Amino acid sequence: MAKPVKRCNCRDAVGKKFGQSCPLLSKRDHGAWWVRYEAPAGPDGKRRRPWAGPYKNETEANRALIKLLAEADSGVVSDRNMLFGDWLDTWIEGKRRLKPSTRESYLEAIRLYGKPGLGHVKLDDLRESHLDKLYTAMGQINNLPEGEKPSEMLRRLLAARAAAPWVYRRDTDGNKLKEKLTADAGKAGPGPGLKRQAPLSASRIHRVHRVLSSALGTAFKQKRIKHNPAEHVELPAVRRVRPLVWTDERVARWRETGRIPGPVMVWTPVLAGRFLDACVDERLYPLYHLVTTRGLRRGEACGVRWEDSDLAVTKTLGVLESDDEDDDGLKSDSSWRTVALGDENAVLLTAWRARQKRERLAAGERWVDTGLIFTAVDGSALREEYVSERFAAIVAAAGLPPIRFHDLRHCAATIMLAAGIDMKVISATLGHSRHSFTADVYTSVVPEVAHAAAEATIAAIPRATRKA
Image (cartoon, rainbow, N blue to C red; front, side, top):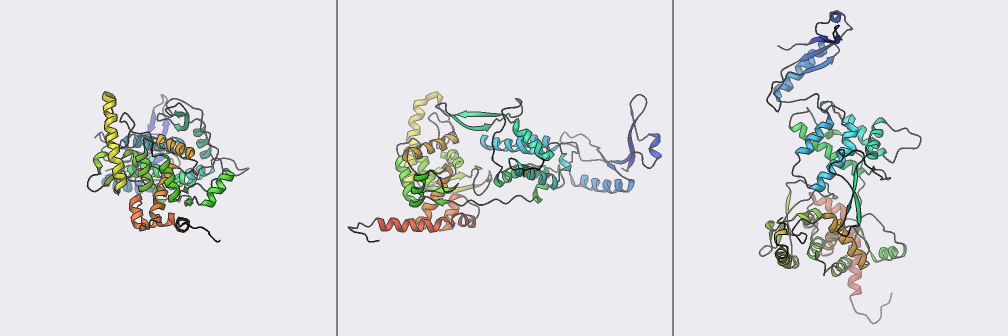
């Protein structure tokens, strides 16, 4: 039966460790207590008899042995030598179903924060306090109080940012676009570094936490660790940014000053109509019309397939909810919803299908059969950034007050609110898990939508004279 033994690191004349046979072990203050026990076989099926320790005395070692044997009986396969950084690499390698853009964001979280901050800590030793220190240091990036010295954790994070490999993406015209972390970051050596000067937002810390929490959750499910420390970490509060409507007054002020009132802006139904009129001759007009009226996320619109649509009978689309960044957080990769199209969207998609068939004939052998509804002219998947870039170009050319492509979701919700649609129906259409979330986000929009609708109604009445 396993029992504690006393060992030390003393060596003989030829450099070999004495281990349990050191003559000085009889002294009370020499060496330490260790235990060796029979653990479940590893993934390769080989026998495992790990050592655990050191412990201060035999009593402490006995208590630890009892606990270790109980864990072994429960099937926990704890590898005390595996570092958290090594586990993050193993975990992300096993995430084979991630979209490229999602994998890129996960790799960024791991390589800029997870590994430089906690990669040296043993997976089995990781605790809530480690994660607390990481998130505190993240909050101090570009935000360290004057006169305060950076912690060792913060210095490691800053060093990782300074050496981050980055590349420039270019559009079809060769124009430089947004900087992105390379998929093989860290393999090609130090790069030009990350130049962002703004502090990290609470939302960014939450997103990094979700990645690390998922990795630790997998380790717990595989019985590599005894508990998931990420479950009990207190994160900084995220300030909810509620959408603001582009009212006539705000539009006028924007035209005078060029200032945008808030980070999330929403068009009124009138402005949304002007946008659709402006892009009616665009190749991707059916996509923009669908998102404006039905509120799909960008990843959902670019990823929806013909096999999941029914244009002829029910006029619906089956949508796999995207994990694009959204007000409602990351979406499950097994979460589906059905979106009603309406007659106009169904007609547009029917015409789009005919156009796609013509493009397939023109492409011949160069056609890429992805099965996607919205594709490039050769059938390949649309680059999501291009969809947003083209949207911004159309908005600018039309002289419309600016919004992000993602804010078309808010426009869809606003239009439905103006049409008197029930909040639960709007929530289901947008794919929110709770309709209370939808109501909370759009509380600030409802009065302005109602006011804009009232103004439009009054303005639509022809009058020879109008007394103020």
